[in-house]
Image (cartoon, rainbow, N blue to C red):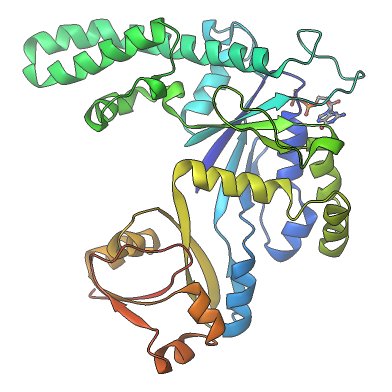
Length: 353
Ligand code: GDP
């Protein structure tokens, strides 16, 4: 599953948000899911298209796409030098696909801010500096060894150059991701698992009144406004009550749904579906993936033995009442190896074993 590390300064609402995301009763009612470890929660990605498809096919169950959230212990200034929970923090965060940084916007005077005042851009700077310093330490540790090896092994020259380039960029205070590295350079750096190479999503933990506000960009990105407190309240409601509460707040969907959607967009991901009497299921693929690659998400054999994919668009599938209706109307396409899968495609793969 897609994994997202939740980071932020202490007391900004990370745990509140994490607990709300992973204990949501309305979601749990529709999709039985569990928290696997105290700080890791697997959360279904809400997608109303799944309910529609399963109704058409009379599917026995729905299996949604999932996002794994990892609550990463509080980052403090000095974490990269191993102070406090620093090292544990860094080990956890290295394994995630993306970072979700919770930034305090809510004003509650009863909740102490580590710096004594609410200041989102300064908080973002603090975390950015820590992440850059952590990466700089990683790179400085790797460099001497690499320089030595590169003297004997000429194939390491390109890698050495990429590591030096990223070192200089980090030392000037830039994230690795913003250095304009080529794909080859990025591949050469992959085994360093640099934190600042990961995409970042900012969540603005706002006051209740601000949940539908448009916020100023922070560090060049539009933060997603979410109230951790509202999410915590929502998590305790059954689906009907939750819907009423959302409408009262002027929202169409929960913070989790928004967060999942933004994370998919950030990472260039989309879903296609398989559906039948047994189950209706969402599968996650990168935008631009071709049919065999999409099949490979289900099973590597599907990719290796790929013959074709019977494909209907989501809209046709719903309008024409399923696979048979699509076939009768000539809307069930036989797609081959070069087909670029579209978001919402309902697919049925044919393959050799
Ligand atoms: P963490 O240290 O970042 O994990 O922060 P916590 O989730 O433990 O929250 C710190 C404190 O802020 C707790 O007392 C929460 O109840 C409170 N808090 C978290 N989110 C909100 C919010 O959206 N609004 C308000 N008013 N308080 C919040």
